[in-house]
Length: 619
Image 1: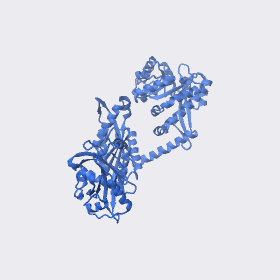
Image 2: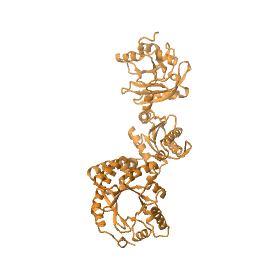
Image 3: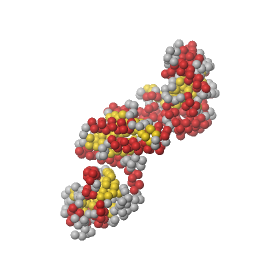
Image 4: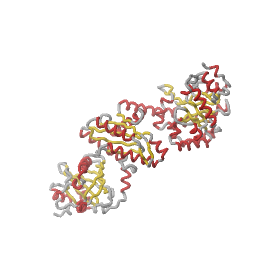
């Protein structure tokens, strides 16, 4: 038999199928693919039997073209991977979604090579793209192209076989190898990336629909990974991510899909799950594996992981919802203290919807002027005058009424609106202090809070703020930036550089809630802090026999030696004011001086001059 004649007839003769041409265009396409050199083609049956092989294909695998049906394609796959190949082909031929696997093959003369096989069905379900790429150098590298598995049907529409093109790896260049791999794999860890992960997830969801089984999606996020990057550099961070990927892979089955979504986020698709107990074991193993210290380049690093689990179909009806709900469960783990895993619950979905609604309301609040600022006076203990105030944001919600920052700032931080809101607060406070410097005192200052998230994200605004102050004819020191104590440890070098930029611009910095974190007075000098605010937890028990007064006195004395001014927060009684004054504290704020108030009220208080707050407050 001459297998170089019409391929449709060759299929009929070589495979004994008796395939008739279904359409002229099908035959034309088949002829074109068959005749192109140096590409080899294989027609595979349901059992991977080779129904047809042209010259190039037969030469690649050592197939006798006169009797291709004597071979099954799976026999050219490494025995321990034959099952993987069968499942891969089954998925590719019964899905419209992409599928990919890595295989060890044995070619002509027994030469072995590693290859990546990638296939994705077209919209009609009649064809799928296939790439067979050797990974080692024994047979060269195969270019990823646009070849197709063409599924062949008889006149009744019954499936007969699949046309499988494969290029001779010794004939084609590897010019597109890096491009394809970059599009589908993560360079750092070698894991599938988001693109390939989404393809796999869609495929596994379809399989679950057909088979009646369910799958679990695990969403992992490393805790405190940013600190590793900031403190040890990105090279160490990358090495930790690569090791984390290896640890995760060791906890899951070979049939599961592990991918890196980006940054420090990983996902695992646990397919074919028959009971939740197996998910529980894997979840616990993942968290435990990532909690062990990492030895990277001679250094011992510690992180942990927060994991979220969502099940299909119980928790979601489609791919997008499944991923979103696993993500929600992961954030529930973080909120619960990190280093744990959580299952998705309907309550989490309600919370997510609430976040969406608040985010939409926040955008409207910015656009329609629903935000307002109240000011809490800060008194100079030496003179009894009010020459400073802290700007505090409030949201006058049209339905929920007046909201404090704790009720909406976390939402603003999570969706990025905190930068725009912070910019609005700064500009409003600047306009107000401009008025007070004219009406009350030329050196009047207003403090503006910066949350840790805001501190990291709004670096590009500082020059704009400086320009805005110049436009108003104000000195930069008119504004004091208040930061939380914990900010100092979120990448010390970057924080130091940011604070130096503040100082160069003329802005002053206050460290809020001092004493609740881990900073020392030496840190304050290093970071260029101007004001130290003693946390109200120390002030509240002043006068009791518990050592708080001695501690406050020590903080005040040492801060003064470092050139810092001290503000006591949460002062509520005249006795506290008296003790702080005797201890040498510079300023105080709290209900003993005044609640947060409208700008007009604060102006009236400040214009009254020196006030004897010791007499006007309770003992």
